[in-house]
Amino acid sequence: MNDTEPNNEPSLELPPALARRLKDAYGRPPVIPAELDAQLQGEACEHLRRPQSTASKRLLPFPRWLAAAAALVAAAVVTWAPVGSGRKDGFQQADLNGDGQIDVLDSYQFARRLQHGDKLEPSLDLNGDGVVDAKDLEILTARVVQLGKQKG
Amino acid sequence: MPTEASTDETRSDEELIALLNQGDSEAFEIVYRRHRDWVATVALRITGDHALALDVLQETFLYFLRKFPGFTLRCQLRSFLYPAVRNLAIAARRQAARLQSDGGTFPEIAGSGHDNASAPDRIQLNRVVAALPEGQREVLLLRFADELSLQEIAEALDVPLGTVKSRLHNALGALREAPETKKFFDE
Amino acid sequence: MTLAAFIYAAMALLFAGGGASLATGAEDNAWSVDKSREVRFAIVDIVVDSGTQPLAAYQVLFSAGSGARIVGIEGGEPNVFREPPHYDPKAIQGNRVILAAFTLATTEPLPKGKVRVATIHLQIQSGKTPRHQIKLQTAGGPEGAPLPAQASFSERNSR
Image (tube, rainbow over all chains, first blue to last red):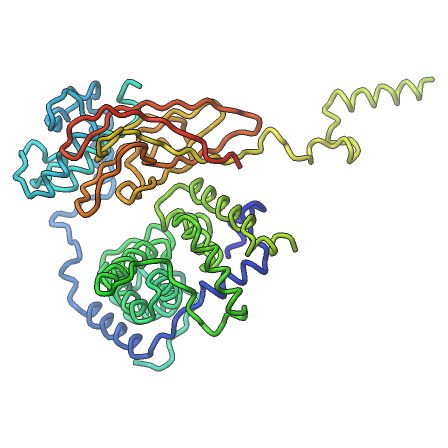
């Protein structure tokens, strides 16, 4: 255990004998055959030797500060996008049950339609990646539980 | 492949991952040797089956390998690996359970040969630990069997540190009250 | 007399200047445990009562009372709500949270009646007895239609 970390709160410690017992009972690995080690090492050599065609190479080099600035602007737009009632904050298209509220029942409808393989409206592409999928559902659900936008 | 692993224990996981991103397979061997036993231990604990645990061990490190090149470690490596081990182990156990008649209950302690406790003591301890809610049991074992720090556990489980402390607090309370483990607190 | 006066004045200065740090061990409050900072953990079960209708989705707003703050959130009792609900991460270390969850489970029946849907871990300052509040924002059945349900909570322990 790392003694430099704040782990030594007395109320969160076990008597040493019980800690040892737990460690002995649950902290021992199974026997691992050498063949498994060798197989994994072989896979590693194979994988790591491959040309790194998947390494991201920027088509156009641009400085990191510009990337950071772009990220900040994007974050600001997302954070300060007008929010108000459930209808007027850019999520109104996600009112799938048409009750005037954006809540978990809309998330539920969204999820059911995804599960059934229904074709969903392009307006539900909330992250703008060209596909309406579970990632958009996540965004909707995050919006549903977001504090500060709803009146208690 | 060399029969003895290069045991360069002075290099941190971060340094080794940087080398892995450059295609250094020796760095993988060091990382593998460093974390292999822990991954296997967690896998065995969740699957309750030696063969399944080895499958999960293999899948976990293949999953890790496929992250390269281009992997950035944002927490302790074990915190990163734990969700993968857990999810793979649960999936493996479910799949095995579908092929068998019994469901997935928390396994009995596998006789490791290292445990000096008597069989009745082992069974008693297993009973108490198995009776804990899953979240509390998980935190308890990560802390005291795997010796992860509270922060590492929070990152591994993707929960706030306060939740880890609360679960651990309650788990310890249960151990303190259970007749089988109360005696350890009275010593 | 002059020496005594000087001694008395010096002692007065010491006390006036926060003499706790120079007090004897018995009076040295700087080294004693500050009881006002002790905390206790509490576990609050969140229950949605759907009556005779099967519950497939819910959304509640929980407000912890004064002196309490939310430190953890977990799932509930039936398998379909065993995973932690959705919530805003900013709720942690705060005192308000909106919990929402739904289930698409088709292999087991949906729960009915009083359903423990979630668990909230609270850290409460010593000596405080906070009064929490809960409001059901919506609940839905398997077809997604709103249900007339009620939300409540109960504190499991106060250790």
